[in-house]
Amino acid sequence: MSYGTKAAERLANKIILITGASAGIGRATALEYAAAANGNIKLILVARRLQNLQKLQNDLQSTYKNLKSHISVLDVSKIETIKPFLSNLPSEFQKIDILVNNAGKAIGKAQVGDIEQEDINDMFDTNVKGMIALTQEIVKDFKKRNADDIVQLGSIAGRDAYPGGAIYCATKFALKAFTESLRKELINTNIRVIEVAPGAVETEFSIVRNYGDVEKAKQVYDGRIPLTAEDIAEVIVFATTRRSNTVIAETVIFPTDQASASHNYIRKN
Ligand SMILES: NC(=O)c1ccc[n+]([C@@H]2O[C@H](COP(=O)([O-])OP(=O)(O)OC[C@H]3O[C@@H](n4cnc5c(N)ncnc54)[C@H](OP(=O)(O)O)[C@@H]3O)[C@@H](O)[C@H]2O)c1
Image (tube, rainbow, N blue to C red; front, top):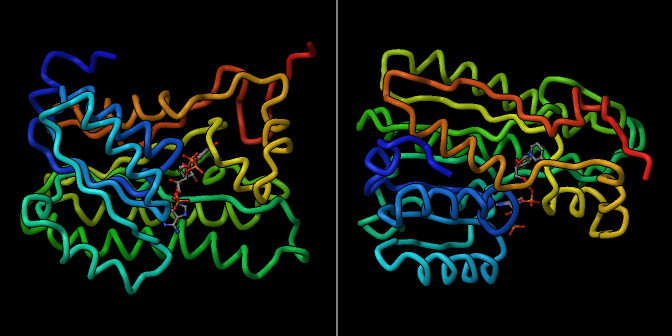
């Protein structure tokens, strides 16, 4: 996809950190940035599954000989590992320009009263506390350097709460509030705070939500045409390649057969 004549120029030599790059939207975003910059970019790709990151790195390096990438295991919910991860980045990757806070998950659909404490902790520790801890560290450096962008993966779940989503929705409402405060706090800087809030995207998201049950995960999309990870990656790359006077502050992106968290058109065949 073309992001305009200036996009590759604007991305040239930028250092981009993407959390949750081992699958879904994070992986697609890495590939989309590489394509938009013609490989003239440096990517820091983190998640818990090293093998997936290695595969992504191989795919990137075989297509773009000029691309530089650094992969690392980072579990954002282990907050104490965030500072050491950042200070141990190779020197050529230290001045991050764009942070994509993408790592996140929903676990289960249990209703209040029946939600496992372990699942509550995992969702809040990853989607909220880990995201905040990483942003806190990075924003200090961004302020010193007047760096570029912080991209937040929100969700329609952060605007429209639904039964069986009490905790996931609460984490994405929390992300939205944090993101709005941050944008206001950074008003006197060049740092742009961008929230991208998708509806249904078919990734590993539903597999994780259904505790690894692939069949149940598939049923979520029965009779629907969900978004793909690439659809969201395109919006992220578009938003971060606008002219520096422009902030795409928020976008809600639905598949055309969705109009709210629970209002979907289901085809009958
Ligand atoms: N899919 C949707 O319908 C949808 C809709 C709205 C918003 N979103 C949001 O979009 C983001 C990406 O989701 P996705 O759809 O791409 O799901 P996905 O395919 O399941 O990918 C999630 C990514 O997050 C990583 N991750 C999970 N826990 C982590 C942790 N503790 N530390 C570091 N990385 C972790 C996973 O990697 P590892 O397992 O290797 O760590 C994976 O790379 C999430 O924030 C999600 O809430 C998704």
